[in-house]
Length: 191
Image (cartoon, rainbow, N blue to C red; front, side, top):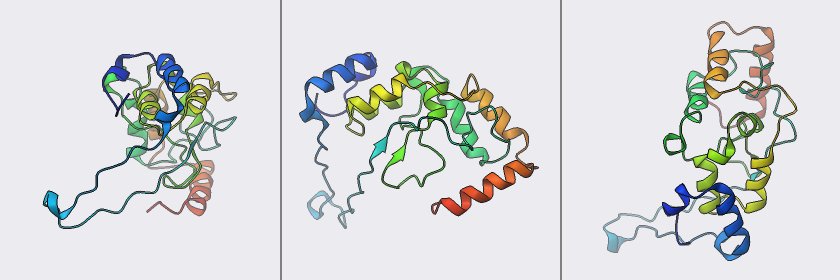
C-alpha cells in the first residue's frame, strides 16, 4: 500500500477502510521529498502544516450551500460551481474533500461539510477514497462520513444546490446579507 496507487481508486471504499483498519501503520504521514540544489532547485520549499480533518458536525451549518433553507446568494459563483463537480461519476470528481465553509480552510480541526456528506453518495466519492489512502483521514473518520445522515433537509444534488445558491447572487436578501456578514467576521481567510 505504498503511495496513492490506482488500485485503491477502483476498490470499494469499504474495502479501503477495512484494509487500513487492519494496518494502522499505513496512516503515518509519508515522508516527502523536498527539492534540493542537487535536483536543480534554487531553494527548499517549506513543509505545509498538516491539518486535522474532522467528521461532519451533527447537523450542517446554517449557511451550508447544500441545505434547502439556506438563503440564496451567500457564496461566490466559484464556490457554487464546486458543488456540481461532486455529482459526476467517481473518476471525474474532484480529488479533495469538501470542507465546511464556516471555518478557515487551513485551520486545525476543519470539518468535512455535513451537507456534502449527506447529499452525495460517499461510497462513490473519489475524494473520500483518496483521503483514506493518502492518510489525510483515518478509518473512523471515513466511516463517520459514510454513515452521515443530515437531520436537515438537503438538495438532492450539488447541481440543484448550486442553482439555488446562484439564483439571488446579485441581489441577496436580508437573511443572506446577515449570513455573509457573520461569515466574514468569523473567517480570516476570505478576501
